Length: 542
Ligand SMILES: [Zn+2]
Image: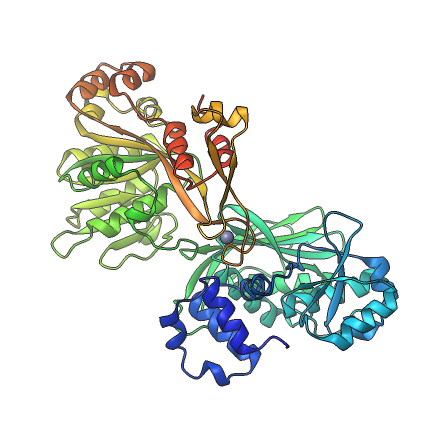
């Protein structure tokens, strides 16, 4: 039986892509044409069509082929009747391990087509499920690569630039991607999206003219100069998705000329995180309790530390969400404003002619804030203003670019802050890293290797969790990310040592900190993430 709306719905429920209640609220879905159902259900559950077809493959016990990642089997493509590929019905792919050839099909029950394939190839072939639109695009590219004219109107590709960019942004949103990369390649353009910190291919083999059209479309939307193709430019725009109930997305766009031509990077602000609450960040119970107490202090400075992309601002936003109450005035100064938080006055650096964090903070102080979030302390002037604000009855939350919590003190001193002032205002410093969270639906365990057991401090019979891959996690084995934390809370003894400019190791010893790696090991033992993730995230710690 061909894939029906009913089968797609059952598969989506089984893979936990959508809940019973959400599906029930999708009135009249049973009577929709297949494509309209896919459109509606993916928007409601916020997952891409590929997840739906992966779920079908799971239920049927068939392999699934990701057509954007799979290698087409060009010898077999040449031997097939072109009409089958042109219609986007099948595509022979090389699945590892070679030399096995599998046929990805939009409809695994299309006996006539599969019989024609077997006849043409003169052999039996394994059948795999593929997402129809991606299959059309990949089949068209494979035809071109095999020396035939590609089909028109195939897949995400070969649309006009407006439709194509809209489709790419929608797909990026459904995949909870944080960035979209439009990259010139030797033979045209590739589109990749960043999900949970890793890049994944979304569209490959766009023709050069289509690539140029996309870049122009981005430039028009972002208010950039289309004629200027050599100098780097940046700008932004707000994009409304054609999905019921989704908020407009703020997008920052940057272009630059590379060896192969112009590329663009789009940052989708505030769309990647799932639920922005303190409880989902992955703090251990004792850490969470102390963090909550820290952000309820009436004044002082609380710092989040770590390199770019370690999730500092996600944690700060979650904290702001929690402290924001009707009787408290919360203000932020940011560059850029990444998430909009209800009830919080958010100010972009540079607004109103003030071009620095320090200048904007001084202006903010005239607006009687109780809690202030300063996007980043980058210079001595900002550090000075932030410390003084913290000393005069405001709780100031900010971030610093340092590798560990104790290193934040060295950094503040380097920026010219007085040790006694830091000792008197600093509530705590928290170092953070992000690791990918194992998909709870498909994670497996295996015996630890000797090296892993040593890393974990466990005996060699220990089991370690490993990523597998299913429809819910798009085959990656991971869904979202969690933080590793090293929390340094300043008590009387620590304050005395800070005032005396005690070295980092001295402070560390006095406070008995749980390191990022130790925090990560705890998370591996509870099967939240893998040994590899923690090793990689804490590589520079030891
Ligand atoms: Zn999974």
